[in-house]
Length: 531
Image (cartoon, rainbow, N blue to C red; front, side, top):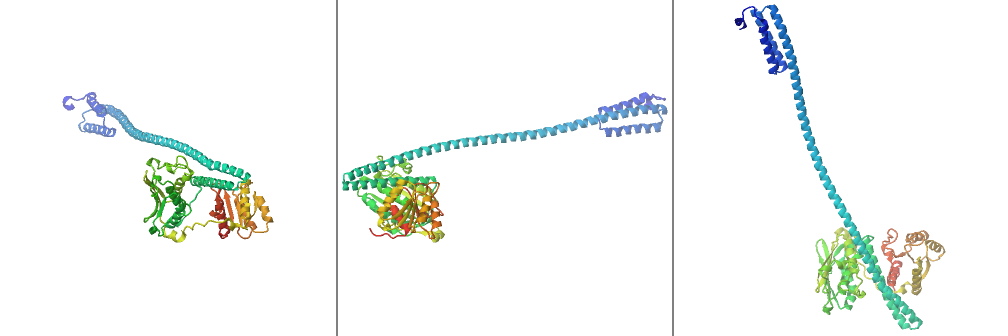
């Protein structure tokens, strides 16, 4: 076209300016990729060179000059395009990196939000735990205060009830002393008998308080065995029959139900539970039902448990008092605290024993004015324990006579001078030969001098110089080749001689003379003689 428009010689400057513009547009406005642009440029230059070779339209000198500038423009354009592409790539990489950073930041923000939520949840959980701990501490503090108040009330009631018979005992003894000075033997004997009744009541009350204290303190460990509950009921009913008759109460227990009922329980505590429940029904007979007052003892056998029911048609208990009657010294129908109606500890001991024994449960149903039903549920003994450790309660011992002890030789270890003097006085009245010391060291010296093996050792548990009854038993074993029975009489709760002496070789103070006689005869193996 240039050949047609412009005659020879062509103005190569006008000829190449068009190519320059093409290259400028190609490199600048089109913004092609550097490699593709370079290839396209080379193709254009090659086409120009081929056209020149074919047509010879431009003089070689002018063509060379024009090509020089054209090549410079191509180089400059290519360098600009390369820089532009590099800048675009860098921007693209930066944009991608920014997008990636934004994505990572969003993930981090989400993770931070999750951690914040977890932290808030943990804070709330910690707050809930703190509140629960504070509430628990408050409950424990309140429970401790209630226990302290209950213990204070218990001690106050115990002190009050102990003062009464002790006060009567002092007055009876003072009156008996004056009667002896006046040589009124009949009056002094009667007053001493009354004093002994007050003393027995004091001992019963004190022992009841000790039993309840031991049960609540956890010092009592139940010894489970298979026990024939039917025989326990038989013996308990027989023992309380006279008491029921003296109160005008009919005590009934169906003999048709007296086939064996083996249960897993403690053979020592369950008779006391039953005795307290029956005695409670007898004591609270309804006065308006004279001649019709009845206490019925029932036995219900089930596949997995046996239940004792003690029913009475007495005064009954209002529902609002059902919890209170199991508290120590609480007697709903005895506001004047008449000791003839009991000590107010029976149901407390029953409740503590049943709570201690595994698988046992105490139930109460009562209607005011119509009567009450106390029920104790206990597990049936399995066949293995029934074959291995079946125990039938021993029959109640017949009344013992102190004359059976005459001629026995007893060593007494007791540090309290009053207790030691009282024991010596009893031994002298019973015809018991004895030697008495107050310390373990004195007992050791006594063992070196005696010529007769003692029939029995009676010792307090806590002795002077940090010694105990364990030291007494050890000295006996070291000195004598054959076993010598030992009886520990202590005023401390929770004393354990396990591994040293049998459980029946430990008695708690105070104890009655009859109990002391019975246990001395049992340990020495002396048969009781008729009174």
